Figure 1 (tube, rainbow, N blue to C red):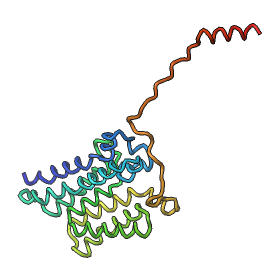
Figure 2 (figure 1 turned 45 degrees about the horizontal axis):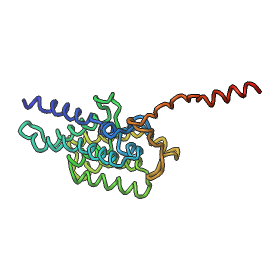
Figure 3 (figure 1 turned 90 degrees about the vertical axis):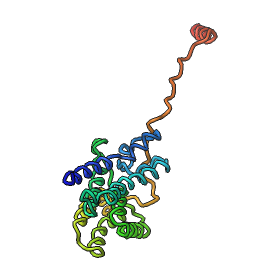
Figure 4 (figure 1 turned 180 degrees about the vertical axis):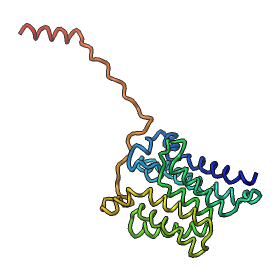
Length: 237
C-alpha cells in the first residue's frame, strides 16, 4: 500500500490542479471564457479584464488553494504511508502541472503564479513569504506583474537552497520555477520590446459574456391603408 501511495496522490493532485477555476467561475457567473480575450490566459489577472472583480478574486483564491491543499494533506496524513516533506513538494508540482495542462479543459491552462504560491506556502510558509515579498518589491518598483512573477520564481529555489539547504524537495521547486518562467515566454519578449502592460494599464477587455441578451428582430413594417392611398396618389402625379 505504501508503494502505491505516492503515485495515487500525484495523480490526485494533478486532477485537482486541472480544475481551471478561471473558466469555472466565468461560466458560473455568465462571463466570457477567459481563454478567448486579453492575454488568453485562464488566470485571475485576465478574468479581472471581464470587469467582474468577484470572479477574479475567487479565481485567485481557489487557484492558490489547489496548490496549497494537496501539499497540506500530504504533510498531515502522509506519514503512515511513507510520505513526508519531499513527497509533498512533488505533489505540489503535480498540482502545478495540472494547472498548466488541465485534463478537463483541453490542456489549455494558465501560467501558474497563484498555484505556485500556494504550493510554496504549503511546502514551507517562510519560503512562500520570502518569495511573495520578492514579488511585492518588484511590482512596487517596476509595476510589471509579469516581471515580478518571473523574478520571484527564479529566487524561490535559491532561497530554499541557501536558507534551508539542498534537499530532494529542491528538485520539485526548481522544476516548478523553470516551468513558470517558460510559461511567461511571451511576457519576456514583450518586456524586452517595451510593450508589456504595467499594473493598472488598460489592456484588451473581455468580449460580452456568454449569457447575453439577444434582441428580438423588429416586426416588418405594415403599410396602412393611408400609406397605400398615399403611394397610389403619388403614382398619378
